[in-house]
Length: 210
Image (cartoon, rainbow, N blue to C red; front, side):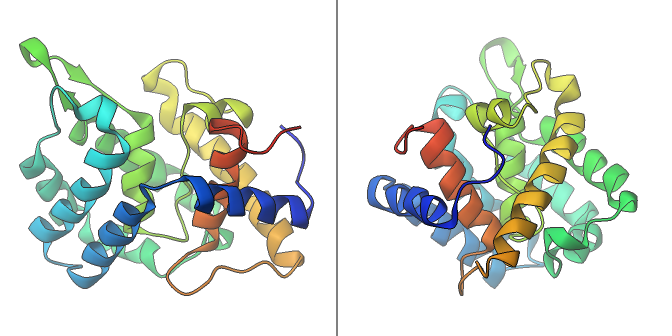
C-alpha cells in the first residue's frame, strides 16, 4: 500500500466512488434509521439489516443473521457503544483495544449467516460495517481487498479482531494526514466514510490505477 495518496489523488478516488457506486443510498438510509431510533434496539437492528443485507448480499443470500440475537447484543452493549458514538478515531487510546476487540468478537457470532444444516458463516467484513454504522467516525470500514492492501488481512476469522486493531491504527495515521491537509468530513458523511470511499475505489474496484 502506498504511504498516503496526494490530496488530489485522494479526492479523485472519492469522486470515482460516487460516480460508480449505486448502493450508497442504503448507507444513508441505514445511518438515518440508526440515528433516529438510537436506544430503540429493534429499530436499530432493522437499520443495520438494511445495510448488511444489501452490502453483504452474497453472504446472506442463503441464510441471514438472527435479528433477535442482534437486538439482544444492542441492548446489552448499548451504553458501551453509545460511548463511542460521540468520539472520532483520533481519540483512540490503548484502553480501547480490549473493548473494541470484545465487541468485534461478539459481533462475529451475532452477525453470522445461518446456512444449510445450521452451519454458521462468520464475516469480519459484516462486523466492521455494523460497527461503523453504530459509531460513524470511530470505527473504520474494510473489506477483504482493503484489509489485504493494508497488510491486515485475517486469513482465519479467529484472528480478525486482532487484525482489525492493526487496521484501525493505520487508519488513524491516514486520518491525521488528511486532517493536517484540511480534509474534513461533511454533514452526514464522516471522514472515516470518505476514507473508505477512497480505499474502495483503489483497492476493491481499481477505479483509480497506480
